[in-house]
Amino acid sequence: MGVSERETNGRDDRLRAIVEIVEASERPVTVEWLAERLSVAPATIRRDTNALEQRGAVARSWGRVARPGGFVEQPIGERASQHPAEKRRIAEAAARLVHDGSLVGLTGGTTTLAVARAIAGLRRLTVVTNSLSIGMQLAPRSNIRLILSGGEARNASFELSGPLSVSAIEAFNLDLAIVGVDGLDVRTGCTTYDHAEAMTNAALVQRAAQTVIVADSSKLGRTGFARICEVSAVETLITDEGATDEQIAEFTAEGVNVIRV
Image (cartoon, rainbow, N blue to C red; front, side, top):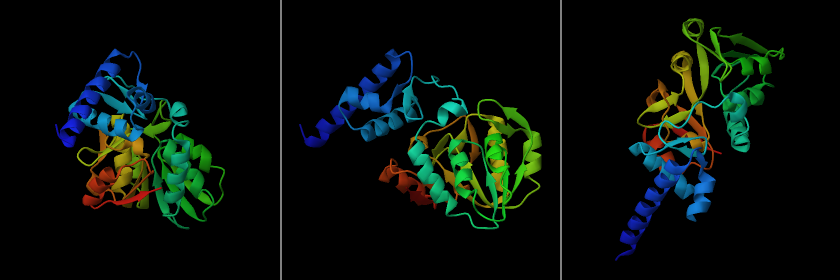
């Protein structure tokens, strides 16, 4: 038996083992736990579970793996504690794209909240956002003109969404939209859990001259319920070093400038 055939058989056995473990578990399991259980690198498990998710065999979310349909949206307070170092580096990279006097749209999310903190010291900045968390972060800043979109507040994300939010955002022209996502895939685009939230985020993208996606590597290759926009609407993706070369190549082939930090 050749080396490549042994590798193929070994991967097939591992994929079957992952599905069996996930099916037997009452709760989502972490990538790290699976890697330790199967004696392989976490990067290998990420690739394997990505392939399984595309087949509909498992679901992935924030570094965890579950049976299909096994996830619900995590409250923003829980998400804030996940990948903090990666989010900080991503936010700092995004802040370097923002200049004094810019007109910036920020969607809600824990990564965009980190971006808000990173840009808070800039002068003469106008920020349009649907995020109550970002609003609370920037409202005390006299150097920032802050515009909240209005709309219905979601308690899972502290975001304002719906027709009122979309209508308010459509009144503005923005230099840059910095968008957080729950999933990002070259085929299914930029996605999130909630349809009304996706519509609001899409409005920010449509009103901006450029769109920057800020997403840690756990979001890549995943697909959420509601689409925000196609990958073709994105100029820049900022992610972390956990993103594989293959994942990066998929986005650059679509004309996206990828910054890996």
